[in-house]
Amino acid sequence: MLEHEVALDDEQVVSRRQRAALFAAFLLEHFGSAALSSGTGVLDVAGGRGELAFELQCVRRVPCTLIEPRPMKLDRRQAAMLRKRPELVPPPQIQALFDDALCRAPEHAALIAGASIVVAMHPDQATEPAVDVALRCGKPFAVVPCCVFSRQFPERRLDGQPVSSYEHFVEYLRRKHPRSQVAYLPFQGKNCVVYVPADLDLETATTMATTPTTPTTLAATVTPELNE
Ligand SMILES: C[S@@+](CC[C@H](N)C(=O)[O-])C[C@H]1O[C@@H](n2cnc3c(N)ncnc32)[C@H](O)[C@@H]1O
Image (cartoon, rainbow, N blue to C red; front, side, top):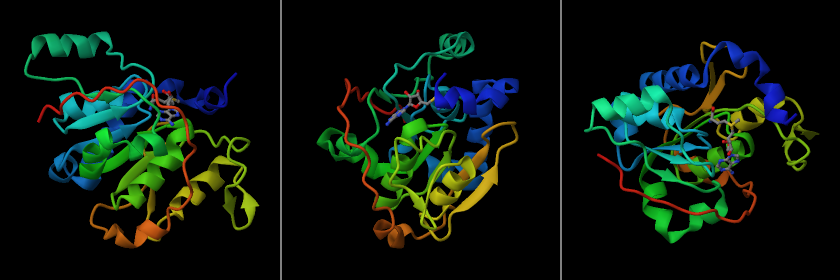
């Protein structure tokens, strides 16, 4: 069994769609629709089938780009919504890993530089890169960590100790910016959001997010236009 499957056991009571809707509501409440919609909109890192990206773009009308190596997969409800409302455009996807290579690729520079925020729900190995890239680019972030992957990232330290538990990982992420905060989404399981409030001057953060992301090979890349 994979590490994240163990971590997600408690969450069977809430569907992925409900979790995405609750996280979208959190983002709207804490950052506001106008701020989220600014520039090229929200970057949803490791968004899986695209529930959160769809919720933001099609339900909440906040432009959002999904960055996820697996293809986006609409469920029946989402497909029906698009059939009924042809003005809605599904979120564009960059079908690739979110890593240094992607962030440095010239074809993605405008999208990343223009993003309003980097968000991620249970993003597995992309959790720390999502935070680091946001801070490096002076952007707010909101991530809901799930798995620690301590063996894959043995270099992480919290007070000199390896980061090996979920609680330590949350604290490790929180300490990446002095004014980052922790909140809890209303579902059971890994529901802790680490985020920086939208009104922060993130200039000071650029020197703090220094951990390099793991270099990986880019998968096929698609960059459709944002719809708004
Ligand atoms: C546990 S799933 C969660 C998916 C979705 N966010 C959700 O909450 O249902 C983790 C996802 O992270 C993606 N992933 C892992 N590493 C990634 C990376 N470096 N960049 C982008 N996606 C990544 C995987 O492909 C997988 O879809």
